[in-house]
Image 1 (cartoon, rainbow, N blue to C red):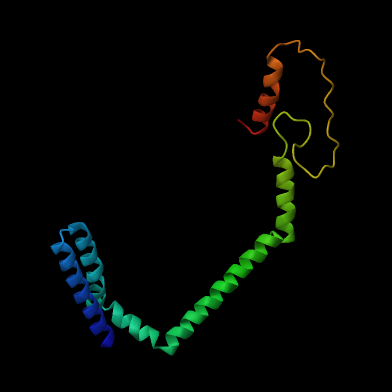
Image 2: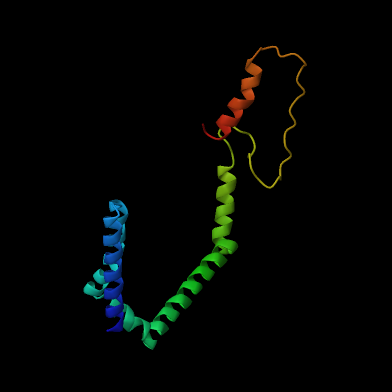
Length: 150
């Protein structure tokens, strides 16, 4: 009952301020103030204020919010542990095998990513002057693009 009275008073005061603002020929601001001042009375008319007042003073409602909070904390904790751990041992083994299969670029003789089990092939030293002209510069770029599937 008190909440409805307070909301009505706030709406009336807001509409009064909007009228004074409109009298000063600031119509856009007056319309915005009127819109904000109609919100509390609209909430009273729809019953939201009564529901909020009943919820705010109900111990059962607060216990329900506590239960929801505990459920949310448990859910987030299990998600964080699952991400850190990476799932079950079987799932981690399958993911590692899939990563090794996917790490081989098409046409490559060795995985492009990995733990370093194979030694990297050392590129042969190039002569000081390029025999093909400008093609030599683009071969590295083409290799990178092919590696990424572009």
